[in-house]
Length: 117
Image 1 (cartoon, one colour):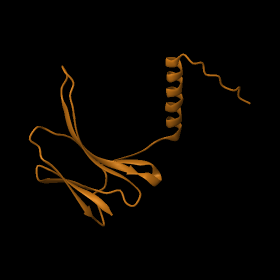
Image 2 (cartoon, helix red, strand yellow):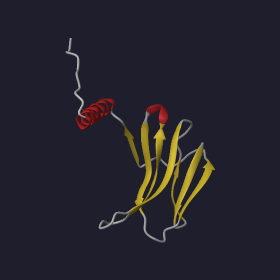
Image 3 (cartoon, helix red, strand yellow):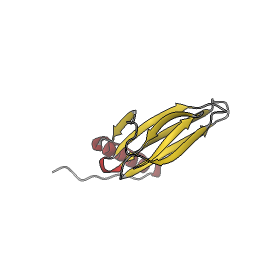
Image 4 (spheres, one colour):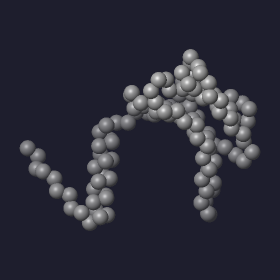
């Protein structure tokens, strides 16, 4: 499988891979806002598509001067993710309904629903 070997300051952090069907990411983020602290972090994760499972190998704070390296490799095995999460379909539906209600209110629309049978 295709995998990422991730290093921070020349030290191996993890080997991450998701198999045959999914998304694998290695993201370095810097976020700043005047008057607030800066966020600088590394996230290595992905999505195992067939089971809709979000996986994470690393979510670490970085500092100025850190060196990040990602090597793309073919591997038979990778490190197990440190975190696995599956979405709950009932929670998804609730969030979607709440979003629709909030947008309808914002736009001045009225939602009409059918009476339950």
